[in-house]
Length: 483
Image: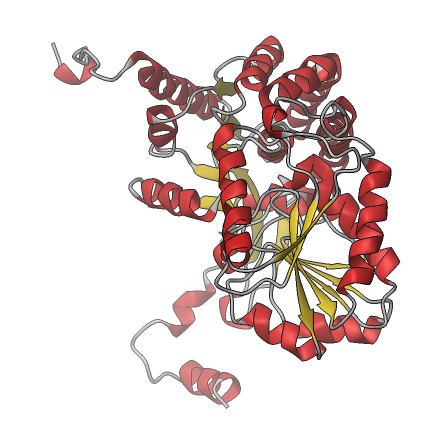
């Protein structure tokens, strides 16, 4: 018998949970090969299935996420995650048919007669690695893009989101076969093995150090990556700006999810001598939103002891170096046993403090005073490019001046955070804050292969310029095209 027709069965030496991932990927690749370019109707129907199950499981999802955090507002999850995902489903379903159409391209005179276009094909199987801070929107968000582009997907949920991961696995298994969408839970060796699988693309959202590890692992199989990383996103308040207006918007963005947001403002530049005025406005808005903290279901806990101790370490380091603290704890409650950190502003910071070197990822906002707006530009440009940069100023010309002289994944004028939930805006970083984009039409295109197509008719004009050279046609060609 021909050995090629009867493959030898080899006993796997992989741990069962890792073997499961290999089997799931093999099944998805096989299923994809049987229908490599699903129609717009099929894609829209898949997104509709996803939308229905998110609506059905919304309460279970919100309660599971709150359980993982120790406490997170059900309303915060429904507004910031579930509603955002539902809007994405609607947006992609509305637009993907037009995005799928071939894009006609110009053919130069040298290559006429011919036709050329670009056709957008699915990549195949997408591996999506989601963090714990927004476990739904950062797993299902990329999934919507992947399904719209005609791909299959495997979702790796953070080990810090165990309750949520179980709910999502059950919810998606109810509407998708495993060879189309699969959820993988677990951490450690599972995470490491996941990013080493030969996907057709990996989407990772998380920290810069882990992003480097994921990229190195993906390179083993030449898997392209979309990296959505973090970093220190600055906010700048111009001297002409109302500090009250700026404080209101910064409070909303910084203390949402207790600052555990990759695009939360990480530090703020305030005009020299106006720190206490700014602190007073921040205190007003913070205490208005959170009059109590300990048992307040609206105020989120820090996800786990590791993250809580990390932030406390930054605060201890700042105290040792002489920083000034403004803590907004209206009822003066002991929060240690509930893993909550009161909204806190820190003044008199220096660049050698850990608060100014590391991404904070908590409800702590360092204040840096400045004399001239160009100082802020120099400070930002001397550091890694941030995921977001927020500028507060009602003067459009000055905002444009700031935009032209800085780089960031997003440039926000008089707003923070909410750009992530905008359907038609791409989301992503630049430099150390990431590469690649999803959301908006960029999500569709970045999870598709732009395949060039060129067609020649029966008449083969190229033969006129083939060797031997020196014919009259060559002289005409050089005279007209090389002048």
